[in-house]
Image (cartoon, rainbow over all chains, first blue to last red; front, side):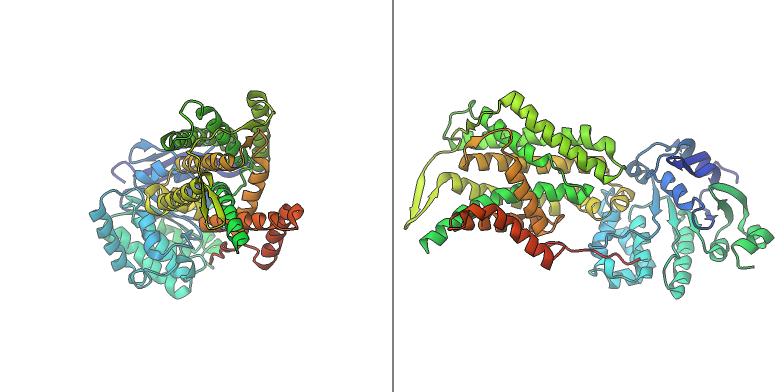
Length: 240
Length: 296
């Protein structure tokens, strides 16, 4: 890492009442990279992302994005700075059509030409969305909803994309497609990616660096190549 | 037949007022998932605003009536925003029950502050708009009813435009569909919630004035019964649904008027609530409401 990291989190702690969900978490994500945050259920992965995007307030710690302290900004101001979050469970607007969902993604965009152009990029990335343009989002399959959720986030022209368990609850055949698209988004559009996953094998394959979270603490970190060889990790997450 | 048409006109004008009030309940429920019990009392404040402002303009003129209506709507929009800011926002993120109980508290606060400020004695609402009585055959319709039948649908149509054609309306719909997802696409939920309260409260004020023009005895507890009816209308139509609230208001207003004009008039409220029970048994989500099951 030569330049300053795009996103840096230092000593972040988040709690729900008396329960500490995340303790003293620090991480750094370089511009243009794909970094993954691994961990089992309840490790604090989603809590971390929610705090980064402003949905939750941390108890202490600091989040710096492109050199600016964004720790206590409300979510809409964080999105406006180019940090987008594709939430767990996709959270598409179920009653709205695919087209309307994408239009919502461009809520903060004022340049109509740019919005139309971004939409075409997304259709090139996920042709399925173009075919289903008029369909109600709630009736899409899990994989298609995931594509829509990613597409919606991309409509905001982010510099940084956080994906929360994009493989969760979708057909295995589509998981590979989604992961290929994530790599494509990173390579062709230069969008930095933070990928939260339980599917450690896949996540480590496409990322360059990984952090492992257990009950709110980072227990292990390193280049993804090394993590894949880590015996402890193999036993716990990689199926031996 | 004459009797039927007469009751239809009466029912429409009452129903249109219930619809205006029901829209406020349903909009707040849509974005915050709780019933704002203080809404009925904003209706009352709207009526009193009309009472006091009505003294400042010459009575019985069209411009005077419209000016009072607009001023009362603005005043109540501010009151609605203030109520949300002071009473509900600090509780956001906590259990909905807390907000619900607070709403009942705010309702009582407005009612009894009203008794201190305006006095408990009923007052006679002034004649804001020009008065005339028209006859279509043997069916009579008063100018006040015409004002209701014209103004209420215009306001409802205006609301539809705001919700479906503006950026703020788009944000309101996003918030009502998924609060978190709306924030993640960049919607400022505080602005949306304040706007929703402003819009709902302005409609309540209009409802209060239109209601008082046709039932001109006003007092600080006057909101209770229309509020309950409008709340019922919102549930009946499907809480969270704007066309549902309008439809529910018309059904309830119509039913109440028809029963009130029949030999069972004593039971008019019982029958209104009876309709609610029957419809909810048959369609638990209300007439136009739907339970949305999201695929996980």
